[in-house]
Amino acid sequence: MKTLFSLSEVKEQIKKGKKLLLAGDESLLTQLPPGHWIAGTIPYFMTENGGLTTKNQLFVTELPAFIGDFNIKKYSESSVADVYNDAPENGFSVIIIPASSPTHFSFALNAPQYDNFATNQLIGWIAGVHVDEIGNKKPKVFNGEQNESIENGAIVMHVELPPTKYAELNIINIFTQGNGDIITFPEDSFSATEAVINGQTKNFAAYLTGKEIDTRLPLVADYCGAMINTSFQGVDTKESQVSFYAPVFKGIQYKIAAPVGDYISAFTRQLPKDESTQIFFSCNCILNYLYSELEGKKTGEVVGPITFGEIAYQLLNQTLAYLSIKDNQQS
Amino acid sequence: MDLYKISDQTWEDLILEKINFDFHFLALKILLSRLRLKAKTNSSPQSIRGSGEEIKNLFVRFKNLPAAQRDFQKILEYKGVANENIV
Image 1: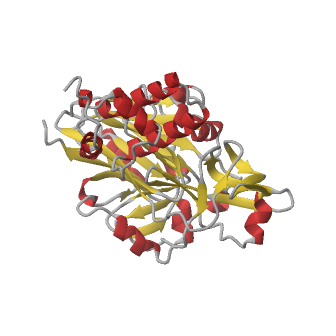
Image 2 (image 1 turned 180 degrees about the horizontal axis):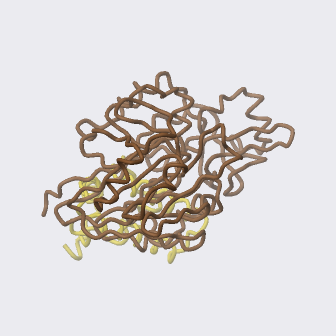
Image 3 (image 1 turned 90 degrees about the vertical axis):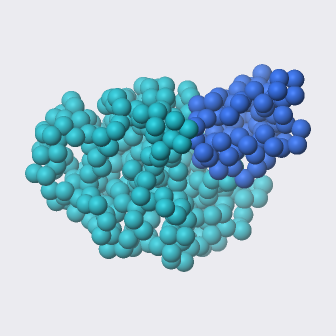
């Protein structure tokens, strides 16, 4: 199925009243007419033909015709705490947040404490920019109905499904905990100076460099069998500071991930059989794209934007998040 | 999925890690991990009861999902779990 479209093609789809989830470069998104769409900036995609970097086309996910009511809502850094309360009883919500915005950091740190956390199918992604433009250009998210873009906040499409359907959210994470040290942190934070390694407090930057840890491998926590990653952003030995792309949480036990040979093989092994035809939306991490050199390579039949963070109930790193829409056998 | 077949004590035992399974349902894995973490810093009966309610409500909310149904069945089949006062 075609996933990348030209600006004029997307304009036509919007004019026809289609309900769309879009991803692409800001220069294209700002030219779109008002309509039933939301979007985030990113120039990286996993397409039906493989990984691709482009600023000239938009990635389009069209909502199926059978959906029930839907609404698009803008949230602030504080009001995003209501995102689970606003979700439909049977359906799903797609959230897009600009990278490095206060809302990004707030959601990452606080989502698990939100009212009704994880009681609705919340999938989404962190909008970004081309890696060469990091620091020079700000990621944005768009509310098509209001024809507005924002650099801080979240845009969410809440979608209701008919009783004959249900939405199922899941992840594919090729990383597992390695057999190394148990690492915990003294506070919830996007950075750490110290960590407790097997019960002993140590300078974390010195620990990582001393042990020659490959920081392309994430920290992995075991959430009752779900492997949840936190990726390294940088290690500054002078400042004794280690930064992350998602927060580490006090009390959670982490280990450095076991090395992975070939991403595509590991990914394909984890892809549930027959699931790909039911996947409505998915997104994968820019770090997987870059570290595993996914440009030009296919990850099975799974397509979607390549993002600066994935959301499956909470913020994730180096993970593919996907939402399937399935027939309800009981209705 | 008859939630009343599982006693309040069982939901609390899940929080207190007295009952453990390989769960299927992603929301359950993530929420349960969070609530177990919370229980380590606040193990008051009131807090544990509240967390048990949260897990129960998750199953109420997702009663039609096969993954949730599979996990519910695992808990139900765990020896001694059935709420015999109600069933």
